Length: 484
Length: 140
Image (cartoon, rainbow over all chains, first blue to last red; front, side, top):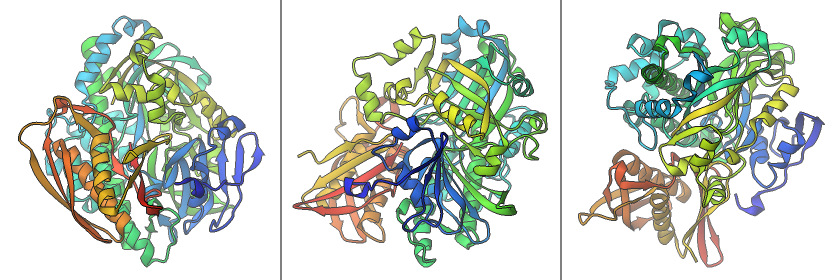
């Protein structure tokens, strides 16, 4: 982390959208970063590229170590990192998934038009903020989960939440994996992790998590937009949150275990945050089961947040809860067992996506039937001042990125840098002047998350579209934001 | 020389702690962690409680990470902030720290950073001339 450790990483430009990090040192494969020149410039001086190279040293990696155009310096893997490991002789690494397991995004569509809510935005944002606890240590007092509820949520995911009255029967049809990773094994989730999660289901948390009321302001692909039920001027709700303290604790618990496991299996780590274990080992399987259980908790968390958003919206405007329909729900911090064709051969691999979204194309059996003709919706939030995108997965993602795509804009300013730039400014008032009503759990969060802190997500989307990983379907502009 | 400072990082919180020796380094790292989390809006109450944390690990960096992680847990679960920190015992594989502080409700706190975890990324304790230093990356 010190300057002497920041060795420059050699890069070779392949085409306008791709850069290769040639194999060197302990790398067993190349790294590929999807980025244009402008995005590459923004990586100068930090360790994001070095982190791609580090991933390429892990045992059993299949294909290249990959990074999406929203890449930035993280811990272990870079944010925006994707890597697949052979299911039989590869590894699994909590540092390739992140602390916030199954942090992800859900999009709801409404029958409302922009004009229906514009005059009532303050009221709407306040109502949502009242319904969804946010900020540090936020917990719900109106949802009393018992140990058995938590167990069921971790094992069965959204099916449990719907049976418990949080949502509509059809919701699960339009979620990644139907809101349940079948490999979940709550038995690997520690007591402390359970205690942290018990009162946090249905809460937003903090940092970059949000509920955003927006409207479709551009449609790029009429057929896909129609399939997703989106049209110009329609009001939407975007929800971004994850597995809260439960997921963090699962990650924490297993990194310690995997450091010992790495030593025992003779795996040399260039960064201890890359601690890993063979997926086929007892501890590897145990983590995979616990991580999947935490992922199911996160799916339930977004399900409950969506449920309470529906209630809040229905109280303020003329839109009954059931009229807010799920478009899709994607995980962007997860590892999943998937089958991919590599060099012409079908292989079972464990795809790690850390700050990356699954982007399966048209025809893939895991894409919901309603969307199968156009491809899986890929939800890419931007910042709270500009816009977010809905994309559709393309065949290029299957060919090059194990069916993966970007997950957001990627930060451009550090949080302290954002605070410096915001000194003497009233960010909430500035956003209000641009028609965006913001309510944050704290002033600090709003400042840290101000629009200038992020890259323009359009630049990120431009690259994934140019590279053929996904195509643009619609753009959403924010109108009201509740920040964690 | 300030005992700790925030270094540039695009998404998380990178902190450099510096001290004369390891005992002081561990104490400053704990102080920095609590101070980076929050401060009590109305000051400290007269009733101060003490808590003890014993942390172990395979090496001193692992011990430091575990210690800070447990401090975060005290804050997250009870709203506990430490006013005074005393490292009672320290070795290459364990340490014991006594914290004197108080628990606060959310409305009694001004939250500075929402630290979610202490990462392993780049974590090492280094001797630099007459100082001992550590760089700690907190996940936000």
